[in-house]
Length: 485
Image (cartoon, rainbow, N blue to C red; front, top):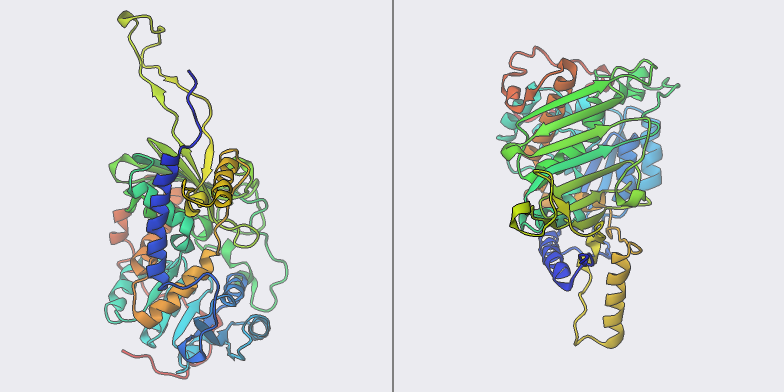
């Protein structure tokens, strides 16, 4: 008899229980911030400055217009005209404009800084920001070189009351938080594998005109001097998902990278394939290419990036979306039941090849996780409310209804950062989360460069005698403040 693959009320109740936990955690993180924002008084807003308003910085400024508990009072970029233009377009607060980030750090009106510059400058700016007494939101990766890992830990011990948050926004998504709840409650059994990909077509394209700030800074993601390549710029988001879901960091990584398609002067790989081994035999496989954007999840309705979380009793497909036209969404699949192998001598059961099993039932249907945030119909509900609820369930199980998250998690993480600046709360993506993520990038690149299995504990021996840090002449000019010691 064919297995009934429709989701039952019991399935929905289990997922709704996970959604309740997520809602409670979100209320705690954001202190009950409502979905519809009300503008806070200027005195309640955290006065912040942003350092770097290129691609990522301008993206953050755009979404900061939807966050009401922070107020931009300073903008810094090596290109002052760009800083002025971005400030005029997005802030509407008449912020001060700086070319040298150290002068911004000397501004006593600035309580917090957002760091969104090229990766190789994250640590030196973070270091100076800590020593100048600022709270810090730093885009990932938090550090770039092995010697910076322990250096930042040591430095932060002297500044424990300052907030240090890293831009790993998936931890602030309701969908990813719900996936974590589902895994932790065992609703998809033992999670043994995660597969993640971020495929683009095209990948980064070399900019031809870099006359204002120089060839390397205009295309910094393509040079190892400034960038960790695909492992840093995109894989780091998804290895953080695996760390989050598994609740631990990997033991080792193996990988293969190649510079096979783009021959334009870059020296970072244009495609990478990685395998991470976690404790208890769990694995994450990862792929990033720059020649095709197909994503074989979500019925191929989404491109580029996503993660597949595979447990013994179910699967979750999840993506953060592109942050603009699409937001995070997730689908839950119940694992098909598997018939037991019955020896031919025990009766009329069909003979089977040794070790073989038969799958009972057809393909499994997907249930949008967003449905769990909806009210489950009760017999006592008004007729139209009850029928509306059942209709949503039916449409979801037919693959017609899918739901995105109601807010971009970038806005949630920034709002959470400003709340933490006022309350001192520990961020979901704190310094240790950021350091673990950065170490994963370093180990991944070593694995590909040296074509070997690289253990994560090797970081303890790296960078012990690094010599002086590289110069950063593009931040030239004397600061107008003295760093605290």
